[in-house]
Amino acid sequence: MSDTYIIEVSSQAAGIVVRDPEGFRFFAASHRFNPMDGQIFRNAREAERAAFQFAQGAQQTVTAA
Image (cartoon, rainbow, N blue to C red; front, side):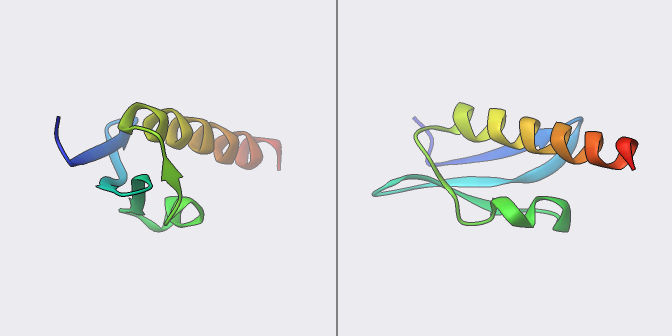
């Protein structure tokens, strides 16, 4: 099992997750995902889902304005 994964949302890099003793720590690759920076996830798939949901929420906020 790998220790580092790239997380992409809509073919754009959201960040990377790196295994640490607590789980997988997220490091944002763009300012858009800075609010997620430093969060810990159980696994890379959980981080990917969270990034996707975060992006969907941000998109809904933009279209609602």
